[in-house]
Length: 175
Image (cartoon, rainbow, N blue to C red; front, side, top):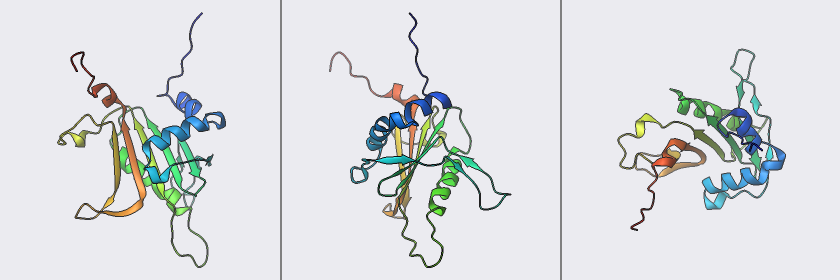
């Protein structure tokens, strides 16, 4: 009897594990492990993963997973198998769609709901080479001012560098 496994680093496998109604509890647990304590998710709904530009000439975007919390916060989850030179720019571009879709016609106060972009990477970013710990798995990025204080806390990018999982310190038998 052969065992069958799903490779989470394929579009099919990733969406099968995290992107179906039956797997919502798994997706919620996964996201709650990444999000700040105050943003814990109890319920979420899947949203249309295809985003159209404002006009026909604009680029269309298709997310791997796009969901919304019961508080209206938007979460994009992207799996990136192959290294892409401009992946950070891609996620910044992707984050503009859930920001823009919150706009209301007429008089509006611009109070936005939080947007989270989660990138699960099967590669590492080159620009962390100068950091003391090059083997971090999770990188959480927010907009900060020149003093390092958070300027805007409703836009968060979370990148998981999966190759660094193997670089985590393994306890020795002498510990």
